[in-house]
Image (tube, rainbow, N blue to C red):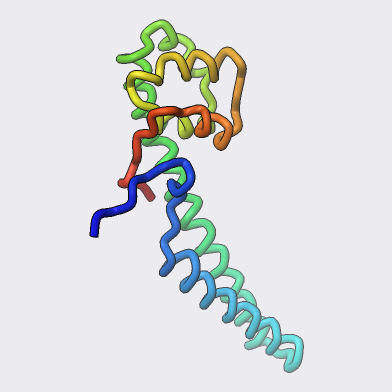
Length: 144
């Protein structure tokens, strides 16, 4: 079966084993430990809450770190695309926000110059709004 064509409507990446199953397990463990410390206060139960909190933090930070690295790679990719496709905006590249760059990455090479100029001129920063302006969506199936 062929993979579904990526569009604005379906481009968000969800990994069910991570987002639902793993988070569910960690959340259930945290709630269970809260219940135990509330019904049977003890040092071991308190330490279990510390462990459960650490697991929740690891879950969120691991995802956040991966997304930050992805944003840095996107910034580099977009810097190269702007240099090549919109050389007049190259000196102003530092004015682009990460939200703008992460949104513009889905624009085709043909539509990037016009859209990049509009985004920077109007100081648009809403990822969803910028993505909705893209007419020729270029999917990115390889991402975190």
